[in-house]
Image 1 (cartoon, rainbow, N blue to C red):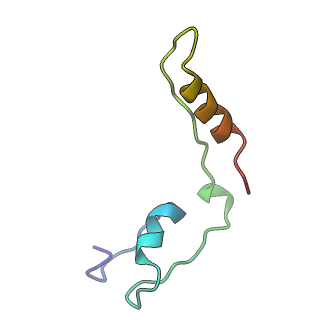
Image 2: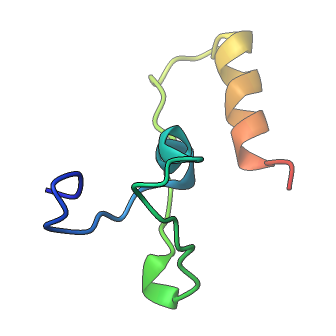
Length: 65
């Protein structure tokens, strides 16, 4: 519907990057509290946890700004 000019879309920044540079769409960043979201990490429960999985979880818990 957005492409047809009949609507709007709320997308993560990573998904909206595909439309960057297009003159058909405008990106407007959200700075309202309702635009924030909580992200969760789910991983299989295994003891011991695979080192690669543990490393990924640690990297995601401490993102680089």
